[in-house]
Length: 195
Image (tube, rainbow, N blue to C red; front, side):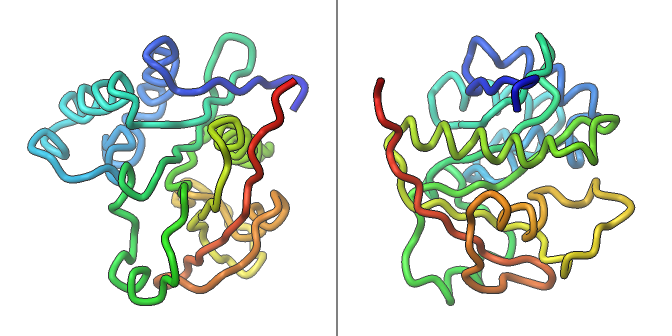
């Protein structure tokens, strides 16, 4: 990770995030990673509306992410937040029926710039999110990666939250299945110590 640095998504880094999203055609279906946020009138109306919504949520301090920088350019990111900030997870009905408790944080989306995929940047983004969560006081963190059975897919663009194997390498443990091909991974993150 020495060649890369992590920065939190803030109003000051939003333009770097926006450039990453724009280079990747607005992310998945031009959602600007608003899919997991609560429903509201402006959500899903247009790419421009989703961008404005995301910018507002960041300005209000209720949208979080770890941005991975290569020099001055953001090349990957991992979205995280509380269940209240990110309630719209995939397979939600099944998830709620099998949950014993809600996490303090969840990681809902990881994006790596198209021409940088396959070089470990998703893991760096996940690690960055965990570090930022530790700085915010830590807690129980969940992720919902694809459980590919250890088989590497040729086209990783559909892996919006990485793979179970990647989460295991980053210290998460398997909790339960979620939907067809996804799972719940958990990790207790200790608060960061202040130097």
